[in-house]
Amino acid sequence: MASETPPPATPFRPPAPYPAPGQRAGLLHGLKTLRSQIEGLPPDVFEADAWRPPLPGMPLFVMLPDAIQRIVLTEADQFPFGALFERIMRPVWGKGLLLSKGSDWRTQRRAAAQAFRAADMAALAPFFVTATERALSRWRQVPGGQIDAFDEMKRITFDVILDTMLSGAETFDREGFRRQVKAFFADVNRMRLSYFLRPDAYHERRSSVVSRHRAGLEASLRDLIRLRRMSASRGDLLDLLMAARDPETGDGFSDELLADNLLGFILAGHETTAVALTWTLYLVSAHAPTRERLRAEAEAVIGDSDVSPAHLPRLGFARQVVSEALRLYPPAFLLTRISARDTEICGHRVRAGERVNIPVYAIHRRPSVWSNPHVFDPDRFSAQGRQPGRFEYMPFGGGPRICIGAALAMAEAVTVIVTLLRAADFTPPSPDRVWPQTGLALYPRHGMSMTVRFRPR
Ligand code: HEM
Image (cartoon, rainbow, N blue to C red):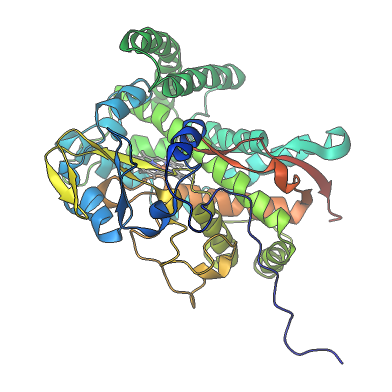
């Protein structure tokens, strides 16, 4: 006789590092951390309020939501990014949003906020669909359907940037720009890896290389902005940014600031969103019940048409799936700040100039907040689930510096994942080829090799 209740789904624990019960911190932690910053973390980072590695000069890890609130919100001025972070990010951001401070930051932030409103981001859905369709057409030509999903997601998110921010000039060399950006970011990444290991002279040398690459990119962007100022509106993100004004002062972006910010948005937005999409695609490919629920929702909401702005608010389960992927594999896995003065956090003394770390990866797996924290379960984010507090779940950070592109990233991720799953099945790599690796974001260490099989339409 058929049972009325469905059998309980088998819990799916996707591959990722987390501590064995009773594991203690020690030299092993230190050594593993050199390879990847989420490797070898002891249980304290997942369970305690704050923890300092037992080695001299190490930063304090802060996990208690109230203490995080203090660092990123209530006393944000006392916990700036720090000189080291600025040194990596300056070549990318110039005078743009991320590294600006005080009234300069407020003006840019208020103006940019006008451009990044959630409703306007949903309106970009047709751009997301076009970039995804372009990828699907490409994969149809690949013998055996073998792709590296990480490379492909980067291509999709980069196409979105080119289409929404940098298009509209016939003379604009898309492929040339793509190559320039790739070379520039590879430089920035190398600078970061060398960070703790090389003397200052090395960084200065690399900075000048980075600046040389940057000058070329900046020149292309300024040309593009000049051409766009003279042409009709296209309803894309660059139009929104060019029209954006600080509601209090009426100030908009100069061409110079627009170019700096565009470069920053490309860096902040394209890899992070690609990483989020790669992990989401992996999770739904490896977990059939979720994949089928996602498809059923898409069928009910969208039918045969393309994802449109009006569909996005109704794709609630797809949004839950992306949120759960961002919990398990947060692209921004660690936030860091410097304490501007001597203070105390969760009973630990922190001196002026010391670094404090907010380990988002571990916070998202805190057993006191999440039941079965290492299990993939999008229903945690259903309306009936317990909604996490602002500083218990923070893939986009928190406080005044919270990610300005969060609505864009979510709208893009939902549209792309739904469009992909309706068109094709993706065979995930075997679990031993799936592992997160820290870098500028939380990358898949071995890439994400998948086989695409198109579904009958
Ligand atoms: C899934 C994708 C993304 C993730 C996980 C992410 C994550 C974050 C996080 C954690 C922060 C705060 C950093 C800190 O407090 O130290 C941040 C800031 C920022 N993000 Fe994103 N981001 C994403 C996509 C985007 C996109 C698409 C854009 C723009 C096109 C963007 C632009 C920015 C900017 C400009 C800031 C700095 C804001 C400020 O300082 O006022 N991000 N992001």
